[in-house]
Length: 589
Image (tube, rainbow, N blue to C red; front, side):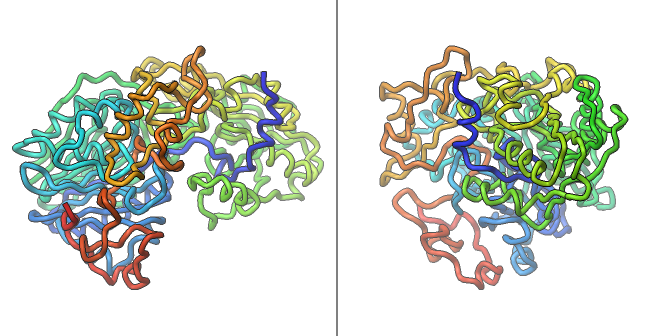
């Protein structure tokens, strides 16, 4: 058994909004609009604003006007990427929007979404993706070095390339042929110049909902990752996009097509942390679920204490529930700086390390001399809680009792949440008492898996619980685990598909850092090193790119868009939107 405390100490202290740990992070948020006569770019902007919590590395909007599609995307928050001038240049009746967090791909302009392709059957395709595919090796090998090679380092570009490569004759036909071939998690919003499409994987792992703008005379429709985004733009919730369903929205109305038999396994962690508290999933309020989890946690793990405090903000509902059930007063013991970004959404450990004291500070007059119950949503590496316990003791806390509103996270996620690799998951090989000792807390308890499932009001068999119990609803083969390796085309004109095929031919042990998601898995061999790739890039990730040409970065004269940051940064005027984005298809072949 490894020295857990030593292992935690070797990892930089992290910063996050709730747990200040580089903990559970979703890959992306997607948003789509079909609304003739409306300012669809502005609607998409506000929708993405509502989904900012699902990704803060990059944002983009693609707008179709019936003839072409214009894409504008950039690194940064939604409010940093878009301004009035930029939005006013995006005119049309159909829009696809995306906020990105990279699960494996590097944080570059070309890895932002929506991705773009010109279809072999004619016309543009723009696509936004939340989730991770698990059969990328097979799909990339099938695409091979065909007409339109992969341009980027994500599975989203792979999906877009497959749609564009299909003979058609329409995007709907291409989608019905391609979607059944995809394995893993995908909530997709995509469009051509006229029509909006939405699709959800057969397991419905991540949410995707349909809404309507009721005051629109000709009918106007919204598709979004969460119901809260519908509320923000004034849309009425209609229903969820069903697992295995594709929705087509155009002037003829809304049509549904089934591309695979539904086998629901919704992500349980959406209830714990990922979704906004004002969102509903499968008819169940996320906020109500979190409060109920707190009540259950108090029943399962009572303790004598003077005050219950949350780690803001996602720890608040569970802390309220714990206080209500236990009778211990609820209070605010930590002050959060709302103007500091969600540090855990940024991939650099150095940035995370410097974020904790910027974001959270104890209220000494509240804490001093008191026995505290500190409620947090999860423990991944344990860095945050260790630093938090130390901070509270320095502020005079008499006792610190940690209560976690999810079970121990023991297994990585392959479906679009950027959990640490299994080697870095503190609970993967350590018991509760070992973890408690390493954190320096007086006591530590997690809610049971059964208690969490009960609070969701969903049948256990319809939920993905893999990060807790290691049971993956989509089977994982050895090659599928490449999705957690960082493979990025860095070697001249060699395509991503070529690199994956080369990696598969090499006699290396496949698997994740820290081992296979099975008890007898082997230790990891870094394929990026094995095939001579640079570290820090990835193929499978719910966000994607319209990236540089294989033989070098694009120039503004070639495609009319800002070049890749760090290679040829756009001017200040262009970043403020003075440069009208050109049709995204105007790029070198």
